[in-house]
Every structure is written in structure tokens, then in C-alpha cells.
Length: 558
Image 1 (cartoon, one colour):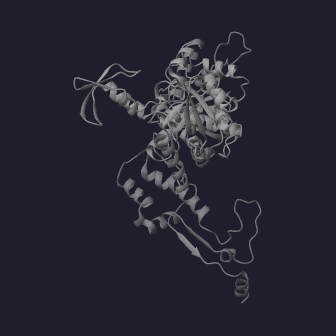
Image 2 (cartoon, helix red, strand yellow):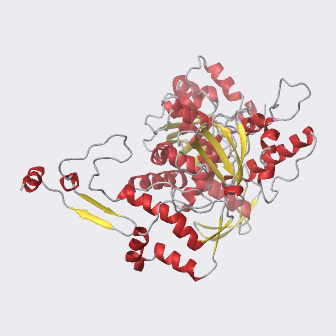
Image 3 (cartoon, one colour):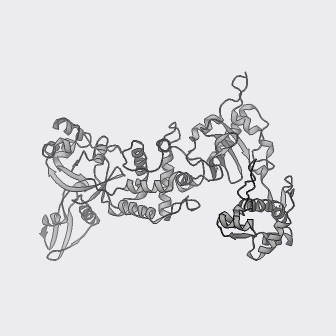
């Protein structure tokens, strides 16, 4: 039987340095989330079981894509399983040296020294200290992780071979001032003798083989199993066969759960033929689990990012009403709900829900963004599907947030301001048109410049106070106007925000009576000087010391 090369099988020869974070972070994240779900991780990452399960969920299996690229993360509805997109974004954030959305580099959290230390420890452990990489099937991987399996058996081929450079040199013979050597895995090589004990190796193949010998598995080496578990080599012992190895090392250490040596040998036959075993021999790699593990450092990062940071790594924005603990439905679910019949019980009706929703929005766009829509139902369905597919592929703004009265919705938008919404589970959709609500602000004359300076200049503090003093209730922008001057925006819109901001932030003499309450009571003494206050906002600031209520009552009485 020839050696199996499927990626689920044991690798014929260990991968060697350098181990790249990009190649292992996906499996490492999957392992960390899975271990958190079944509570074998040994620490709390601060994420619920349902949340972790949804990150690992394959959806309906129709949209599983390769690892996303930077452009995939920057736009488009995230494909399932979500952990792949999250892993790619996490790797890019580590590459930038900060946890941020890769396409805008906005910080996702306050990076304290402990979190930065966890990041550095993980990078150092995976990239700098790991010597080899191996893959092990279940249940043997779980047994290695839990410490039940402490001996890994491999056929001594490739990088498992323990012959050293000295072994090669000792097999050389001189011929007419030249040295010739023939080793098992190379062609005949020619080596010049310069001085006793010093060799000049000719031929690229020889140099390659020397490097390979330097990378052989050795005692003390760190091995990354299945891209997520680090084990340290305690010893490497040679045997003539797997049966000899299992008899010497014991089944409980090499293949826990296997009852007989014959059964154990058959397990190895899935990977190595009898001929390969006889020609190369067998290695028993004794391993132990060190305390420092890459998944522990990654768990610390996930805990620090929490729901909000992970959601933003997936490409979401945060606004008022955002629900950070929710994740978007699968793209296939979004599209399926869009294509459901609108009037299932009406005979002859073929219009889809999506086409019906789009029909209400076609005429609202002044730029004819949606295109002509006066066609047959089948054509409308096709145009609507093309429209929603474009939005899903090119959206650059996504949010899971509460929109009364619909509850939590998943909303997407393109850079043009057009988009769609679905219910939280993705079973109800509707288009929305931001373009019709957008106002263009224009610069017309010097009054616009003066208005901007009045609103934002540090030199205009007193002028801003007068501006706010002369505010007249009932001042509003004309919402029918498409073009708005900067001066009108400042004096009719920004002033409303400024007044509301002052009312919220600057304390009132009756501050213990909230004006939003239906019934409130005027205090007998000024509570403002009992509690004290400090505030600064647009135009004004205040700083009032607090005093003893007894002293205040005495002063009021006098």
C-alpha cells in the first residue's frame, strides 16, 4: 500500500521552519472556538456558546469559499463559515501591529500592555520557536491534546531521518584528490578536499540535503500539531518496525484505545506500506505538552476584543442601536428569502418578494439607479436578483441594529448609499434608498466661511455664546431643498444640535428635577450647590463646588 497523501492523513514528513501565522491562524481560531464550546479550553474567552457556534456554522454548505482576501473583507456580505473571514481579518490586524479593520485601520479597542503582551507571545511562539509541523487524525489528536497519547510513531523518511552531516562525511572515499559519496536519498556527489576536517560541498542538491539534516526532529524541538497544538519532543527512539515500537513503548502511550499490537500495526498501514517500513525503519517521538500554547494567547485576544471588536473585524460598523452580540445570516439565506413568491396563494402570480420590494423603490431614485422596471414579472424577478446580488457583493457598510418597529435587522449599503435590510434571521427583506434623503451642502459666499468659523473656531467662544442666546425656537431647515448653504446648515441645523447638547450637559439650578419626567418637585434648597457640578460644552463651561447641606440651610434661613 502506498502512502496516503490526503490532508486528513498523517503527513509523510514534517513541515519545517518557518511556520507562517497566515497558514495556521484559521485552524487555530477554529480549534479555540470549538474548545470553548465543549469547555475543554480551560479558560473563558468571554463569548457565548451560541456565538461561537454561529462563527463555526457552515450555513447550508452552498457558500463555503476559500480563505478571504483583504478585498473580500473590505466589501461584500461575509460568507460562511464566518470564522474564516474573522481569521483573515485577525491575521491582517496582527500584520498591521494593531487590532483594526484591515481596510481602514481604525482601532477596535484600547490596547493595554497585557493584551499587547499576549499578541507578542503568540507571534513569538508560532513564528520563532516552533521547529516542525505535523498533522494527526482523530481521535489521536484529542488524545495528544489531553496528554493521554505521549508517543507519536512515524516512518523514518524525509525529515524524520536522523542521519547527521557527520554521518555523510564518514561515508566519503577519496579518488584522485577528490572525495565521492553516495547517500541513500541523493545521486553520486563530488566533494573537494581543502584541509583535513574542512569540506567544500559542490552541487545544490548536496547543500539542500545538508540543510535537511539540520532540520531533523530532535529532543527539545517544538512541534505544531494540526496548526494549533504545540508539543515538545522529549526523545526520539529508533525501531525496526511498528510492532517492535508498540511492544517497547506500550499501546497505552502510542495508540490509546487500541487493544492489540496487530490492530495498532494496521492503523499505521493506512499511512505507510510494509516496504517503506522495512526500508526506512520507525521512529517513536515522545512528546509532552508545554504550558505555553498559541490557543491560550489567541483566547486572550478574543477576550480583549469581545463581541464589539470581533464584529468590527468582520467589517461591521457600530451606530446607535447596534447589537454587538448578533451575527449576520448566511448569504444563501438572504438570497433565498429574496426569491420567495410574493403572492403564493394567487394563481398566476410569479413576482418574488424581492421584485415587489424593489418595485416600490425604483421611482424614488432621482438618478435612476435601479434602472427600468416596467417589464414582465419574470424580467422583474431577474432584474431584482441582479440588483440584490450587486448590493451583497459590493456593500461596504454593514450593521446589525435595532430599527423600530422591525426589531433587529441586518442592513447593508454600498458607497452610493443604496442598500437593503433583512430581519435578524434573514427571512424578511426590503430595499431602502438613502440617496433620496441625502442633502448636498454647498459653499456659496463669504457668509458660509464665517458660519463655519463661528461654529468651530477656538477664537469665537464669545461669538458662539451670542449665537446661542439669539436662537429662536421654530428655526428649521427646509427639508424640500436638495442643496443647502453652509451658513443655513450652521444657523438652522447645527444650532439645534448645539442647544440640545447644552440642555443635556450644562447643569440647571433644578437639576434634580428632570424635565423629561411627567411630575417633578422643586427642591427647597439649591441641590446644585449640595452636589456640586462641572461641565463644558459649546460656548460655556461651569465649575461649582459642593457644600454641606446644613450650611446651606443655615444661610438660606439667615
